[in-house]
Image 1 (cartoon, rainbow, N blue to C red):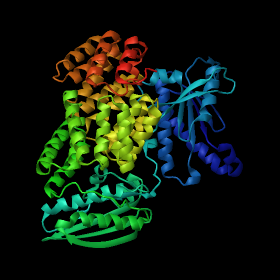
Image 2: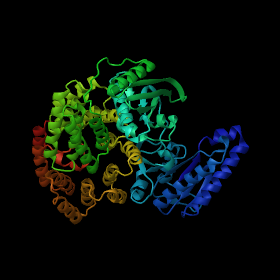
Image 3: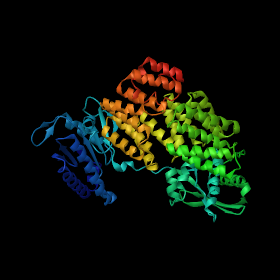
Image 4: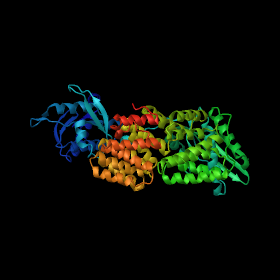
Length: 623
Protein backbone atom coordinates (compact mmCIF):
# COMPACT_ATOMS: atom_id res chain seq x y z
CA UNK A 1 0.00 0.00 0.00
CA UNK A 2 1.14 3.53 -0.83
CA UNK A 3 -0.62 6.57 0.69
CA UNK A 4 -0.04 10.19 -0.22
CA UNK A 5 -1.45 13.62 0.71
CA UNK A 6 -2.48 15.51 -2.44
CA UNK A 7 -0.74 18.88 -2.77
CA UNK A 8 1.45 18.40 0.30
CA UNK A 9 4.69 19.70 -1.25
CA UNK A 10 3.03 22.89 -2.43
CA UNK A 11 1.36 23.39 0.95
CA UNK A 12 4.65 22.88 2.79
CA UNK A 13 6.22 25.68 0.75
CA UNK A 14 3.32 28.05 1.50
CA UNK A 15 2.50 27.13 5.10
CA UNK A 16 4.95 24.72 6.71
CA UNK A 17 3.31 24.64 10.21
CA UNK A 18 -0.07 23.72 8.68
CA UNK A 19 1.56 21.09 6.45
CA UNK A 20 3.30 19.52 9.45
CA UNK A 21 0.02 19.51 11.41
CA UNK A 22 -1.73 17.69 8.56
CA UNK A 23 1.14 15.23 8.34
CA UNK A 24 0.80 14.52 12.07
CA UNK A 25 -2.98 14.01 11.77
CA UNK A 26 -2.53 11.69 8.81
CA UNK A 27 0.08 9.63 10.63
CA UNK A 28 -2.15 9.17 13.66
CA UNK A 29 -5.10 8.06 11.53
CA UNK A 30 -3.09 5.65 9.36
CA UNK A 31 -1.26 4.02 12.27
CA UNK A 32 -4.44 3.68 14.34
CA UNK A 33 -6.24 1.83 11.52
CA UNK A 34 -3.14 -0.11 10.48
CA UNK A 35 -2.90 -1.88 13.82
CA UNK A 36 -6.29 -3.52 13.27
CA UNK A 37 -5.35 -5.11 9.92
CA UNK A 38 -1.95 -6.73 10.48
CA UNK A 39 -0.26 -4.07 8.39
CA UNK A 40 3.47 -3.42 8.76
CA UNK A 41 4.67 0.14 8.30
CA UNK A 42 7.80 -0.16 6.18
CA UNK A 43 8.72 3.53 6.03
CA UNK A 44 7.45 7.05 5.47
CA UNK A 45 8.76 9.29 2.71
CA UNK A 46 7.68 12.81 3.52
CA UNK A 47 3.88 12.64 3.38
CA UNK A 48 3.78 9.08 1.93
CA UNK A 49 3.46 5.75 3.72
CA UNK A 50 4.72 2.41 2.36
CA UNK A 51 2.91 -0.47 4.11
CA UNK A 52 3.00 -4.26 3.70
CA UNK A 53 0.19 -6.75 4.48
CA UNK A 54 -0.01 -10.55 4.71
CA UNK A 55 -3.38 -10.49 2.89
CA UNK A 56 -4.82 -8.53 -0.05
CA UNK A 57 -8.23 -8.50 1.66
CA UNK A 58 -6.84 -7.01 4.87
CA UNK A 59 -4.98 -4.40 2.81
CA UNK A 60 -8.16 -3.40 0.99
CA UNK A 61 -10.21 -3.25 4.17
CA UNK A 62 -7.49 -1.21 5.82
CA UNK A 63 -7.41 1.26 2.90
CA UNK A 64 -11.18 1.63 3.09
CA UNK A 65 -11.11 2.26 6.85
CA UNK A 66 -8.31 4.80 6.47
CA UNK A 67 -10.30 6.81 3.92
CA UNK A 68 -13.42 6.53 6.06
CA UNK A 69 -11.51 7.77 9.12
CA UNK A 70 -10.00 10.64 7.11
CA UNK A 71 -13.46 11.67 5.93
CA UNK A 72 -14.76 11.65 9.51
CA UNK A 73 -11.72 13.70 10.56
CA UNK A 74 -12.32 16.23 7.76
CA UNK A 75 -15.98 16.72 8.69
CA UNK A 76 -15.05 18.82 11.74
CA UNK A 77 -12.23 20.77 10.08
CA UNK A 78 -12.03 24.01 8.13
CA UNK A 79 -11.23 23.85 4.42
CA UNK A 80 -7.54 24.59 5.13
CA UNK A 81 -7.27 21.72 7.62
CA UNK A 82 -8.75 18.98 5.42
CA UNK A 83 -6.54 16.00 4.54
CA UNK A 84 -6.75 15.06 0.83
CA UNK A 85 -5.54 11.46 0.83
CA UNK A 86 -5.22 8.90 -1.95
CA UNK A 87 -4.19 5.25 -1.74
CA UNK A 88 -2.74 2.68 -4.15
CA UNK A 89 -2.73 -1.11 -3.64
CA UNK A 90 -0.85 -3.84 -5.52
CA UNK A 91 -0.20 -7.53 -4.87
CA UNK A 92 3.13 -9.10 -5.78
CA UNK A 93 6.48 -10.48 -4.63
CA UNK A 94 8.93 -8.19 -2.85
CA UNK A 95 12.53 -8.39 -1.70
CA UNK A 96 12.61 -7.94 2.07
CA UNK A 97 15.84 -6.44 3.39
CA UNK A 98 14.72 -6.15 6.99
CA UNK A 99 13.95 -2.45 7.31
CA UNK A 100 12.82 -1.98 3.70
CA UNK A 101 11.21 -3.78 0.77
CA UNK A 102 11.84 -3.42 -2.94
CA UNK A 103 10.93 -4.92 -6.31
CA UNK A 104 8.48 -4.43 -9.19
CA UNK A 105 5.47 -4.80 -6.90
CA UNK A 106 6.55 -1.79 -4.85
CA UNK A 107 7.12 0.21 -8.03
CA UNK A 108 3.61 -0.59 -9.37
CA UNK A 109 1.93 0.40 -6.10
CA UNK A 110 3.82 3.70 -6.08
CA UNK A 111 2.78 4.42 -9.68
CA UNK A 112 -0.96 3.76 -9.35
CA UNK A 113 -1.39 5.75 -6.12
CA UNK A 114 -1.00 9.18 -7.86
CA UNK A 115 -3.75 8.19 -10.30
CA UNK A 116 -6.34 7.84 -7.52
CA UNK A 117 -8.92 10.53 -6.83
CA UNK A 118 -9.04 12.64 -3.69
CA UNK A 119 -10.34 10.28 -1.00
CA UNK A 120 -10.01 7.36 -3.40
CA UNK A 121 -8.44 3.90 -3.47
CA UNK A 122 -7.00 2.42 -6.66
CA UNK A 123 -5.99 -1.24 -6.85
CA UNK A 124 -4.56 -3.53 -9.51
CA UNK A 125 -6.19 -6.55 -11.11
CA UNK A 126 -4.05 -8.80 -8.90
CA UNK A 127 -5.69 -7.35 -5.78
CA UNK A 128 -9.15 -7.36 -7.38
CA UNK A 129 -8.91 -11.08 -8.21
CA UNK A 130 -8.21 -11.86 -4.57
CA UNK A 131 -10.88 -9.67 -2.93
CA UNK A 132 -13.83 -9.05 -5.27
CA UNK A 133 -15.93 -11.91 -3.85
CA UNK A 134 -15.07 -11.02 -0.24
CA UNK A 135 -14.77 -7.26 0.08
CA UNK A 136 -17.96 -5.60 1.27
CA UNK A 137 -17.90 -2.49 -0.95
CA UNK A 138 -18.34 -2.25 -4.70
CA UNK A 139 -15.25 -2.35 -6.95
CA UNK A 140 -15.33 -0.58 -10.32
CA UNK A 141 -13.12 -1.05 -13.36
CA UNK A 142 -11.06 2.04 -14.21
CA UNK A 143 -9.29 0.46 -17.19
CA UNK A 144 -5.78 -0.19 -18.52
CA UNK A 145 -3.15 2.40 -17.62
CA UNK A 146 0.44 2.74 -18.86
CA UNK A 147 2.69 3.36 -15.87
CA UNK A 148 6.15 4.88 -15.83
CA UNK A 149 8.93 2.25 -15.78
CA UNK A 150 6.35 -0.57 -16.06
CA UNK A 151 6.59 -2.51 -19.36
CA UNK A 152 2.95 -3.61 -19.83
CA UNK A 153 -0.25 -1.63 -19.18
CA UNK A 154 -1.79 -2.35 -15.78
CA UNK A 155 -5.52 -3.03 -15.27
CA UNK A 156 -6.78 -0.81 -12.47
CA UNK A 157 -9.91 -0.90 -10.33
CA UNK A 158 -11.21 1.50 -7.70
CA UNK A 159 -13.22 1.16 -4.51
CA UNK A 160 -16.61 2.87 -4.87
CA UNK A 161 -16.90 4.78 -1.60
CA UNK A 162 -20.37 5.12 -0.06
CA UNK A 163 -20.34 8.92 -0.24
CA UNK A 164 -19.78 8.78 -4.01
CA UNK A 165 -23.37 7.54 -4.38
CA UNK A 166 -24.83 10.98 -3.63
CA UNK A 167 -26.35 12.21 -6.89
CA UNK A 168 -25.11 15.51 -8.29
CA UNK A 169 -27.46 18.45 -8.28
CA UNK A 170 -29.19 18.50 -11.68
CA UNK A 171 -29.23 21.47 -13.98
CA UNK A 172 -32.67 23.06 -14.04
CA UNK A 173 -34.32 24.03 -17.32
CA UNK A 174 -36.99 26.71 -17.62
CA UNK A 175 -38.38 24.76 -20.58
CA UNK A 176 -38.92 21.69 -18.41
CA UNK A 177 -42.13 21.92 -16.44
CA UNK A 178 -43.74 19.97 -13.61
CA UNK A 179 -47.53 20.11 -13.31
CA UNK A 180 -48.13 19.12 -9.71
CA UNK A 181 -51.37 17.26 -8.87
CA UNK A 182 -54.08 19.88 -8.40
CA UNK A 183 -55.46 19.92 -4.87
CA UNK A 184 -59.15 19.27 -4.25
CA UNK A 185 -60.43 21.93 -1.82
CA UNK A 186 -64.10 21.14 -2.32
CA UNK A 187 -66.12 20.26 0.80
CA UNK A 188 -66.78 16.80 -0.65
CA UNK A 189 -63.61 14.63 -0.83
CA UNK A 190 -65.30 12.61 -3.59
CA UNK A 191 -64.81 15.59 -5.90
CA UNK A 192 -61.12 14.70 -6.10
CA UNK A 193 -61.69 13.20 -9.53
CA UNK A 194 -62.06 16.76 -10.85
CA UNK A 195 -58.65 17.75 -9.55
CA UNK A 196 -56.99 14.57 -10.87
CA UNK A 197 -58.69 14.96 -14.21
CA UNK A 198 -57.64 18.58 -14.47
CA UNK A 199 -54.02 17.62 -13.77
CA UNK A 200 -54.14 14.91 -16.45
CA UNK A 201 -55.60 17.17 -19.12
CA UNK A 202 -53.22 20.05 -18.52
CA UNK A 203 -50.26 17.68 -18.82
CA UNK A 204 -51.73 16.21 -22.02
CA UNK A 205 -52.31 19.68 -23.45
CA UNK A 206 -48.88 21.05 -22.57
CA UNK A 207 -47.19 17.88 -23.85
CA UNK A 208 -48.19 18.86 -27.38
CA UNK A 209 -45.84 21.87 -27.21
CA UNK A 210 -42.54 21.15 -28.93
CA UNK A 211 -40.68 23.86 -27.01
CA UNK A 212 -41.49 22.27 -23.65
CA UNK A 213 -40.44 19.15 -21.81
CA UNK A 214 -43.38 18.10 -19.66
CA UNK A 215 -42.95 15.53 -16.90
CA UNK A 216 -45.34 12.60 -17.34
CA UNK A 217 -48.31 12.19 -15.02
CA UNK A 218 -47.10 8.80 -13.79
CA UNK A 219 -44.14 10.59 -12.22
CA UNK A 220 -45.87 13.68 -10.84
CA UNK A 221 -48.69 11.74 -9.14
CA UNK A 222 -46.08 10.57 -6.63
CA UNK A 223 -46.13 14.15 -5.31
CA UNK A 224 -49.80 14.09 -4.45
CA UNK A 225 -50.21 15.40 -0.88
CA UNK A 226 -46.46 15.89 -0.67
CA UNK A 227 -44.84 18.14 1.93
CA UNK A 228 -41.73 18.60 -0.22
CA UNK A 229 -40.66 22.10 -1.16
CA UNK A 230 -40.68 23.57 -4.66
CA UNK A 231 -36.87 23.42 -4.66
CA UNK A 232 -36.85 19.74 -3.66
CA UNK A 233 -39.35 18.74 -6.35
CA UNK A 234 -37.59 20.78 -9.01
CA UNK A 235 -34.24 19.24 -8.11
CA UNK A 236 -35.60 15.68 -8.09
CA UNK A 237 -37.19 16.12 -11.53
CA UNK A 238 -34.55 18.50 -12.98
CA UNK A 239 -37.31 20.98 -13.83
CA UNK A 240 -37.05 24.77 -13.79
CA UNK A 241 -40.74 25.65 -13.65
CA UNK A 242 -43.53 24.25 -11.53
CA UNK A 243 -47.30 24.68 -11.95
CA UNK A 244 -49.40 24.11 -8.85
CA UNK A 245 -53.06 24.75 -8.24
CA UNK A 246 -56.29 23.84 -6.56
CA UNK A 247 -59.85 23.11 -7.64
CA UNK A 248 -63.05 23.90 -5.78
CA UNK A 249 -66.40 22.50 -6.93
CA UNK A 250 -69.60 24.08 -5.63
CA UNK A 251 -72.80 22.84 -7.21
CA UNK A 252 -72.32 23.08 -10.94
CA UNK A 253 -69.52 25.63 -10.70
CA UNK A 254 -65.77 25.02 -10.71
CA UNK A 255 -63.04 27.42 -9.66
CA UNK A 256 -59.41 26.60 -10.49
CA UNK A 257 -56.60 28.61 -8.92
CA UNK A 258 -53.07 28.12 -10.21
CA UNK A 259 -49.63 29.68 -10.22
CA UNK A 260 -46.33 29.19 -12.02
CA UNK A 261 -43.24 29.14 -9.83
CA UNK A 262 -39.59 29.53 -10.78
CA UNK A 263 -37.83 26.62 -9.06
CA UNK A 264 -34.43 28.30 -8.68
CA UNK A 265 -35.74 31.39 -6.87
CA UNK A 266 -39.07 29.93 -5.70
CA UNK A 267 -40.47 33.18 -7.03
CA UNK A 268 -43.96 33.68 -8.45
CA UNK A 269 -44.01 33.93 -12.28
CA UNK A 270 -47.74 34.04 -12.96
CA UNK A 271 -51.03 33.21 -11.31
CA UNK A 272 -54.71 33.29 -12.13
CA UNK A 273 -58.17 32.07 -11.19
CA UNK A 274 -60.57 30.55 -13.69
CA UNK A 275 -64.28 29.84 -13.24
CA UNK A 276 -66.37 27.48 -15.30
CA UNK A 277 -69.28 25.08 -15.43
CA UNK A 278 -68.91 21.36 -14.69
CA UNK A 279 -70.20 20.54 -18.16
CA UNK A 280 -67.49 22.78 -19.59
CA UNK A 281 -64.58 21.30 -17.63
CA UNK A 282 -62.52 20.51 -20.74
CA UNK A 283 -62.78 24.13 -21.88
CA UNK A 284 -61.50 25.26 -18.49
CA UNK A 285 -58.61 22.82 -18.84
CA UNK A 286 -57.70 24.16 -22.29
CA UNK A 287 -57.85 27.76 -21.04
CA UNK A 288 -55.43 26.96 -18.24
CA UNK A 289 -53.02 25.24 -20.63
CA UNK A 290 -53.13 28.20 -23.02
CA UNK A 291 -52.47 30.70 -20.24
CA UNK A 292 -49.54 28.64 -18.95
CA UNK A 293 -48.09 28.46 -22.47
CA UNK A 294 -48.34 32.24 -22.83
CA UNK A 295 -46.71 32.73 -19.44
CA UNK A 296 -43.81 30.53 -20.59
CA UNK A 297 -43.77 32.23 -24.03
CA UNK A 298 -44.22 29.02 -25.95
CA UNK A 299 -46.73 28.21 -28.66
CA UNK A 300 -49.61 25.88 -27.90
CA UNK A 301 -50.93 23.64 -30.68
CA UNK A 302 -54.21 25.08 -32.00
CA UNK A 303 -55.73 21.60 -32.40
CA UNK A 304 -56.90 19.62 -29.40
CA UNK A 305 -59.29 16.71 -29.13
CA UNK A 306 -61.66 15.46 -26.48
CA UNK A 307 -62.18 11.70 -26.32
CA UNK A 308 -64.77 11.37 -23.56
CA UNK A 309 -67.42 13.35 -21.70
CA UNK A 310 -67.97 10.65 -19.08
CA UNK A 311 -66.27 11.84 -15.90
CA UNK A 312 -66.51 8.45 -14.17
CA UNK A 313 -64.99 6.67 -17.17
CA UNK A 314 -62.27 9.30 -17.28
CA UNK A 315 -61.34 8.81 -13.62
CA UNK A 316 -61.16 5.03 -14.12
CA UNK A 317 -58.70 5.73 -16.94
CA UNK A 318 -56.64 8.13 -14.76
CA UNK A 319 -56.29 5.53 -12.00
CA UNK A 320 -55.56 2.71 -14.46
CA UNK A 321 -52.69 4.55 -16.16
CA UNK A 322 -50.94 4.95 -12.82
CA UNK A 323 -51.42 1.24 -12.08
CA UNK A 324 -49.98 0.22 -15.46
CA UNK A 325 -46.70 1.96 -14.73
CA UNK A 326 -46.31 0.09 -11.42
CA UNK A 327 -45.53 -2.97 -13.65
CA UNK A 328 -46.61 -5.63 -11.16
CA UNK A 329 -49.02 -8.40 -12.10
CA UNK A 330 -51.58 -7.24 -9.55
CA UNK A 331 -51.47 -3.60 -10.69
CA UNK A 332 -51.77 -4.58 -14.36
CA UNK A 333 -54.78 -6.81 -13.77
CA UNK A 334 -56.49 -4.09 -11.75
CA UNK A 335 -55.76 -1.64 -14.58
CA UNK A 336 -57.36 -3.99 -17.14
CA UNK A 337 -60.48 -4.24 -14.97
CA UNK A 338 -60.75 -0.45 -14.60
CA UNK A 339 -60.20 0.17 -18.31
CA UNK A 340 -62.77 -2.45 -19.28
CA UNK A 341 -65.26 -0.62 -17.05
CA UNK A 342 -64.33 2.75 -18.55
CA UNK A 343 -64.77 1.43 -22.09
CA UNK A 344 -68.13 -0.09 -21.14
CA UNK A 345 -69.25 3.38 -20.06
CA UNK A 346 -67.81 5.07 -23.16
CA UNK A 347 -66.87 2.68 -26.00
CA UNK A 348 -65.36 5.58 -28.00
CA UNK A 349 -62.86 6.57 -25.29
CA UNK A 350 -59.62 6.63 -27.34
CA UNK A 351 -57.04 6.80 -24.59
CA UNK A 352 -58.77 4.09 -22.55
CA UNK A 353 -58.36 1.67 -25.48
CA UNK A 354 -54.70 2.71 -25.91
CA UNK A 355 -54.00 2.22 -22.19
CA UNK A 356 -55.74 -1.17 -22.28
CA UNK A 357 -53.24 -2.17 -24.94
CA UNK A 358 -50.35 -1.18 -22.64
CA UNK A 359 -51.87 -3.13 -19.74
CA UNK A 360 -52.11 -6.30 -21.84
CA UNK A 361 -48.55 -5.81 -23.12
CA UNK A 362 -47.39 -5.66 -19.53
CA UNK A 363 -49.34 -8.81 -18.68
CA UNK A 364 -47.53 -10.68 -21.47
CA UNK A 365 -44.74 -11.07 -18.90
CA UNK A 366 -47.07 -12.89 -16.53
CA UNK A 367 -49.29 -15.09 -18.69
CA UNK A 368 -49.26 -16.75 -22.10
CA UNK A 369 -47.37 -14.29 -24.29
CA UNK A 370 -49.31 -14.59 -27.54
CA UNK A 371 -52.71 -14.46 -25.85
CA UNK A 372 -51.84 -11.23 -24.04
CA UNK A 373 -50.09 -9.74 -27.10
CA UNK A 374 -53.12 -10.36 -29.33
CA UNK A 375 -55.39 -8.66 -26.81
CA UNK A 376 -52.96 -5.74 -26.75
CA UNK A 377 -53.07 -5.56 -30.55
CA UNK A 378 -56.88 -5.54 -30.63
CA UNK A 379 -57.05 -2.70 -28.11
CA UNK A 380 -54.42 -0.63 -29.96
CA UNK A 381 -56.18 -1.19 -33.27
CA UNK A 382 -59.48 0.00 -31.80
CA UNK A 383 -57.79 3.08 -30.37
CA UNK A 384 -56.34 3.89 -33.80
CA UNK A 385 -59.72 3.50 -35.48
CA UNK A 386 -61.33 5.87 -32.98
CA UNK A 387 -58.49 8.39 -32.70
CA UNK A 388 -56.04 8.40 -35.63
CA UNK A 389 -55.02 11.97 -34.72
CA UNK A 390 -54.15 11.12 -31.11
CA UNK A 391 -50.53 10.27 -30.27
CA UNK A 392 -51.39 7.59 -27.69
CA UNK A 393 -52.86 5.01 -30.13
CA UNK A 394 -49.82 5.28 -32.42
CA UNK A 395 -47.47 4.86 -29.44
CA UNK A 396 -49.43 1.79 -28.29
CA UNK A 397 -49.45 0.28 -31.77
CA UNK A 398 -45.70 0.88 -32.04
CA UNK A 399 -45.15 -1.35 -28.99
CA UNK A 400 -47.59 -3.94 -30.34
CA UNK A 401 -45.61 -4.14 -33.60
CA UNK A 402 -42.47 -4.79 -31.52
CA UNK A 403 -44.26 -7.67 -29.79
CA UNK A 404 -44.85 -9.23 -33.22
CA UNK A 405 -41.35 -8.50 -34.65
CA UNK A 406 -42.66 -5.85 -37.04
CA UNK A 407 -39.83 -3.40 -36.45
CA UNK A 408 -40.22 -1.12 -39.48
CA UNK A 409 -43.91 -0.70 -38.67
CA UNK A 410 -43.00 0.00 -35.05
CA UNK A 411 -40.62 2.78 -36.10
CA UNK A 412 -43.21 4.26 -38.44
CA UNK A 413 -45.90 4.41 -35.74
CA UNK A 414 -43.39 5.85 -33.25
CA UNK A 415 -42.48 8.62 -35.69
CA UNK A 416 -46.16 9.55 -36.07
CA UNK A 417 -46.61 9.60 -32.30
CA UNK A 418 -43.56 11.85 -31.79
CA UNK A 419 -44.90 14.24 -34.43
CA UNK A 420 -48.25 14.43 -32.63
CA UNK A 421 -46.82 14.61 -29.11
CA UNK A 422 -43.05 15.01 -28.61
CA UNK A 423 -43.38 14.57 -24.86
CA UNK A 424 -44.90 11.08 -24.79
CA UNK A 425 -42.41 8.95 -22.85
CA UNK A 426 -43.90 5.67 -24.10
CA UNK A 427 -42.82 6.47 -27.67
CA UNK A 428 -39.16 6.72 -26.73
CA UNK A 429 -39.48 3.48 -24.78
CA UNK A 430 -40.66 1.80 -28.00
CA UNK A 431 -37.74 3.26 -29.95
CA UNK A 432 -35.38 1.93 -27.29
CA UNK A 433 -36.79 -1.59 -27.59
CA UNK A 434 -36.41 -1.63 -31.38
CA UNK A 435 -32.83 -0.41 -31.17
CA UNK A 436 -32.03 -2.95 -28.47
CA UNK A 437 -33.41 -5.79 -30.58
CA UNK A 438 -31.25 -4.63 -33.48
CA UNK A 439 -28.15 -4.44 -31.28
CA UNK A 440 -27.81 -0.64 -31.46
CA UNK A 441 -27.21 -0.25 -27.73
CA UNK A 442 -25.90 3.33 -27.77
CA UNK A 443 -28.98 4.52 -29.64
CA UNK A 444 -31.17 2.38 -27.41
CA UNK A 445 -29.68 4.02 -24.32
CA UNK A 446 -30.40 7.47 -25.80
CA UNK A 447 -34.05 6.54 -26.30
CA UNK A 448 -34.43 5.09 -22.80
CA UNK A 449 -32.66 8.13 -21.34
CA UNK A 450 -35.22 10.35 -23.08
CA UNK A 451 -38.11 8.22 -21.79
CA UNK A 452 -36.64 8.38 -18.28
CA UNK A 453 -36.16 12.13 -18.55
CA UNK A 454 -39.81 12.64 -19.49
CA UNK A 455 -41.09 10.16 -16.92
CA UNK A 456 -38.34 10.13 -14.28
CA UNK A 457 -40.23 8.38 -11.49
CA UNK A 458 -41.81 5.65 -13.60
CA UNK A 459 -40.45 2.11 -13.24
CA UNK A 460 -40.02 0.57 -16.67
CA UNK A 461 -37.98 3.20 -18.58
CA UNK A 462 -35.40 3.38 -15.80
CA UNK A 463 -35.35 -0.41 -15.34
CA UNK A 464 -34.68 -0.98 -19.05
CA UNK A 465 -32.09 1.81 -19.15
CA UNK A 466 -30.16 0.03 -16.39
CA UNK A 467 -30.39 -3.22 -18.38
CA UNK A 468 -29.03 -1.57 -21.55
CA UNK A 469 -26.20 0.12 -19.66
CA UNK A 470 -25.19 -3.30 -18.30
CA UNK A 471 -25.34 -4.89 -21.75
CA UNK A 472 -23.19 -2.03 -23.10
CA UNK A 473 -20.50 -2.71 -20.52
CA UNK A 474 -21.33 0.47 -18.56
CA UNK A 475 -21.57 -1.33 -15.25
CA UNK A 476 -21.23 1.69 -12.97
CA UNK A 477 -23.90 3.59 -14.87
CA UNK A 478 -26.16 0.53 -14.67
CA UNK A 479 -25.71 0.23 -10.91
CA UNK A 480 -26.26 3.96 -10.38
CA UNK A 481 -29.48 3.96 -12.41
CA UNK A 482 -30.70 0.84 -10.63
CA UNK A 483 -29.85 2.28 -7.22
CA UNK A 484 -32.12 5.22 -7.99
CA UNK A 485 -34.75 2.75 -9.20
CA UNK A 486 -34.69 0.95 -5.85
CA UNK A 487 -35.01 4.28 -4.02
CA UNK A 488 -38.07 5.17 -6.08
CA UNK A 489 -39.66 1.70 -6.07
CA UNK A 490 -38.49 -0.09 -2.91
CA UNK A 491 -41.46 -2.48 -3.02
CA UNK A 492 -41.06 -3.55 -6.65
CA UNK A 493 -39.10 -6.83 -6.66
CA UNK A 494 -37.84 -6.30 -10.21
CA UNK A 495 -35.60 -3.49 -9.01
CA UNK A 496 -33.25 -6.25 -7.76
CA UNK A 497 -32.97 -8.05 -11.11
CA UNK A 498 -30.40 -6.02 -13.05
CA UNK A 499 -27.78 -5.77 -10.30
CA UNK A 500 -28.19 -9.46 -9.44
CA UNK A 501 -27.59 -10.37 -13.10
CA UNK A 502 -24.62 -8.00 -13.30
CA UNK A 503 -22.98 -9.56 -10.25
CA UNK A 504 -23.58 -13.05 -11.65
CA UNK A 505 -21.46 -12.17 -14.68
CA UNK A 506 -18.81 -10.57 -12.53
CA UNK A 507 -18.54 -13.88 -10.70
CA UNK A 508 -19.65 -12.18 -7.47
CA UNK A 509 -22.17 -14.89 -6.67
CA UNK A 510 -22.63 -14.03 -3.00
CA UNK A 511 -23.69 -10.48 -3.85
CA UNK A 512 -25.99 -11.74 -6.59
CA UNK A 513 -27.59 -14.29 -4.26
CA UNK A 514 -28.20 -11.67 -1.60
CA UNK A 515 -30.04 -9.46 -4.08
CA UNK A 516 -32.14 -12.36 -5.37
CA UNK A 517 -33.09 -13.25 -1.82
CA UNK A 518 -34.07 -9.65 -1.06
CA UNK A 519 -36.24 -9.45 -4.17
CA UNK A 520 -37.93 -12.76 -3.41
CA UNK A 521 -38.81 -11.54 0.07
CA UNK A 522 -40.93 -8.86 -1.61
CA UNK A 523 -42.60 -11.23 -4.08
CA UNK A 524 -41.77 -14.95 -3.90
CA UNK A 525 -43.80 -15.57 -7.08
CA UNK A 526 -41.89 -13.21 -9.39
CA UNK A 527 -40.86 -15.58 -12.25
CA UNK A 528 -37.72 -13.68 -13.29
CA UNK A 529 -36.06 -14.33 -9.94
CA UNK A 530 -36.27 -18.05 -10.55
CA UNK A 531 -34.73 -17.46 -13.97
CA UNK A 532 -31.78 -15.47 -12.56
CA UNK A 533 -31.35 -18.08 -9.84
CA UNK A 534 -31.02 -20.82 -12.44
CA UNK A 535 -28.41 -18.80 -14.36
CA UNK A 536 -26.47 -18.19 -11.13
CA UNK A 537 -26.45 -21.90 -10.33
CA UNK A 538 -25.35 -22.79 -13.86
CA UNK A 539 -22.51 -20.28 -14.10
CA UNK A 540 -21.24 -21.03 -10.59
CA UNK A 541 -20.89 -24.73 -11.43
CA UNK A 542 -23.93 -25.97 -9.52
CA UNK A 543 -25.40 -27.96 -12.39
CA UNK A 544 -27.85 -30.05 -10.35
CA UNK A 545 -29.37 -26.97 -8.69
CA UNK A 546 -29.68 -25.26 -12.11
CA UNK A 547 -31.47 -28.28 -13.56
CA UNK A 548 -33.76 -28.46 -10.52
CA UNK A 549 -34.62 -24.77 -10.97
CA UNK A 550 -35.45 -25.39 -14.62
CA UNK A 551 -37.78 -28.23 -13.61
CA UNK A 552 -39.68 -25.79 -11.38
CA UNK A 553 -39.97 -23.31 -14.26
CA UNK A 554 -41.23 -26.11 -16.52
CA UNK A 555 -44.26 -26.43 -14.23
CA UNK A 556 -45.48 -22.95 -15.17
CA UNK A 557 -48.72 -22.91 -17.14
CA UNK A 558 -47.47 -20.26 -19.62
CA UNK A 559 -45.39 -21.62 -22.51
CA UNK A 560 -43.56 -18.30 -22.84
CA UNK A 561 -42.29 -18.60 -19.25
CA UNK A 562 -41.18 -22.19 -19.83
CA UNK A 563 -39.37 -21.23 -23.04
CA UNK A 564 -37.60 -18.34 -21.32
CA UNK A 565 -36.35 -20.70 -18.62
CA UNK A 566 -35.08 -23.21 -21.16
CA UNK A 567 -33.35 -20.52 -23.21
CA UNK A 568 -31.47 -18.90 -20.34
CA UNK A 569 -30.61 -21.87 -18.16
CA UNK A 570 -29.61 -24.22 -20.99
CA UNK A 571 -27.49 -21.42 -22.48
CA UNK A 572 -25.82 -20.88 -19.11
CA UNK A 573 -25.21 -24.63 -18.74
CA UNK A 574 -23.73 -24.84 -22.24
CA UNK A 575 -26.58 -27.02 -23.58
CA UNK A 576 -26.71 -25.05 -26.81
CA UNK A 577 -29.00 -27.38 -28.79
CA UNK A 578 -31.66 -27.24 -26.09
CA UNK A 579 -31.29 -23.47 -25.78
CA UNK A 580 -31.60 -23.04 -29.54
CA UNK A 581 -34.68 -25.30 -29.60
CA UNK A 582 -36.30 -22.88 -27.16
CA UNK A 583 -35.15 -19.85 -29.15
CA UNK A 584 -36.58 -21.14 -32.42
CA UNK A 585 -39.91 -21.82 -30.73
CA UNK A 586 -39.83 -18.30 -29.28
CA UNK A 587 -39.45 -16.98 -32.81
CA UNK A 588 -42.75 -18.66 -33.67
CA UNK A 589 -44.51 -17.25 -30.60
CA UNK A 590 -42.74 -13.83 -30.80
CA UNK A 591 -41.75 -14.16 -27.14
CA UNK A 592 -37.95 -13.82 -27.50
CA UNK A 593 -36.08 -11.21 -25.51
CA UNK A 594 -34.94 -7.97 -27.24
CA UNK A 595 -31.38 -8.31 -25.84
CA UNK A 596 -30.72 -11.61 -27.63
CA UNK A 597 -27.87 -9.93 -29.56
CA UNK A 598 -26.13 -8.49 -26.50
CA UNK A 599 -26.85 -10.58 -23.39
CA UNK A 600 -23.57 -12.29 -22.35
CA UNK A 601 -25.36 -15.55 -21.47
CA UNK A 602 -26.09 -16.04 -25.18
CA UNK A 603 -22.52 -15.41 -26.37
CA UNK A 604 -21.96 -19.00 -27.50
CA UNK A 605 -25.37 -19.21 -29.17
CA UNK A 606 -24.58 -16.34 -31.47
CA UNK A 607 -21.88 -18.26 -33.36
CA UNK A 608 -24.29 -21.10 -34.21
CA UNK A 609 -25.88 -21.47 -37.67
CA UNK A 610 -29.31 -21.97 -36.10
CA UNK A 611 -29.01 -18.56 -34.45
CA UNK A 612 -28.49 -17.03 -37.91
CA UNK A 613 -31.70 -18.75 -39.02
CA UNK A 614 -33.51 -17.33 -35.99
CA UNK A 615 -32.35 -13.82 -36.89
CA UNK A 616 -33.64 -14.16 -40.44
CA UNK A 617 -36.99 -15.37 -39.11
CA UNK A 618 -37.55 -12.44 -36.75
CA UNK A 619 -36.06 -9.78 -39.02
CA UNK A 620 -32.81 -8.75 -37.33
CA UNK A 621 -29.21 -9.04 -38.55
CA UNK A 622 -27.11 -11.78 -36.92
CA UNK A 623 -24.04 -9.54 -36.70
